[in-house]
Image (cartoon, rainbow, N blue to C red):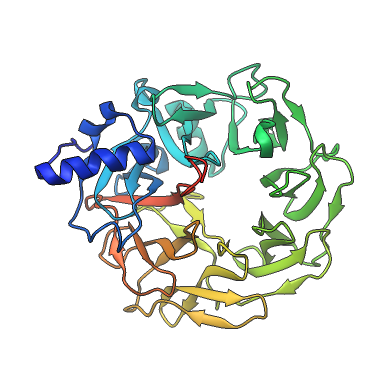
Length: 413
């Protein structure tokens, strides 16, 4: 990975120390931060952390040889500082990490620890399908930013060799996650210490994904065999959201818990829909204009090497941000709940935007783009103006899946 160094002035260093304390990073982490580009003052740009994943995307030989270069990172939202996280998780051969989320108070990062055997990777590439019943070990870990301590929650009383999708249940009641059980993905919950893992699929036998809890923790949602389901947190009262479409993917609760957002339609031809919290009131919000809904990461595409590109809620739940094809580019769009669409970017032909995410205060939009020729992350004001890059990965690499740190929550505000 890139070597890290500090080129800040003495006055910048004092400001940085204050920023580090506010962000929960230890002084030890100071030497691991690197200046990426000049930035305006903190009053003009957000300064909380953004977690993301970076790695090579130009290597021939399939996705595995690129995946093993992936590292979970954080960068400040003003573009000044970057740090690689949990490097001890990548000391063994054929291992890599991915950034996967934040604790509600912003003090902990969710980091995926991944290992695959080269033999299994070769089998998968030859057969053009994933085989996750062997040759893998994937765990969801918590990294404390202040102490750099890593806790592997899914290794406690292990139920699977492949565990992803970790999220925090409200009020410290534990976690939800998605293990593969005999090759089938299931929604599970566990206690705060990683114990007492239990299936909440409501005895469902299908492949489940996109699992999350409502803001109050009383309800859960996920898609099972590409149909959307809503249930109580313990898996009871399971209800299907009837869309009459064969492909339904990645449900997300609105900030107030009153709505679910997901894409629906046919595979590679699906669009933003919403439904009320009990599954009624289905409504198509917008059309993606022929966009397949996935972004290719690799210079030499492999089987299933594209990344899903799904719509997201605004911070106040009044809008949805998404990507759509406009002429020859993939542009950032915004739609309100009445269906009024606003195009946020207008790009040169062939430009791709991907993975939008709205800041917790609703003022800023994080997204990926290859507008420079390399897949970097950018931040813009919520209307798509005042854009600046926050990553500086070299040619032959890409930055993906940005996550805003929950601003103003880590210190109780």
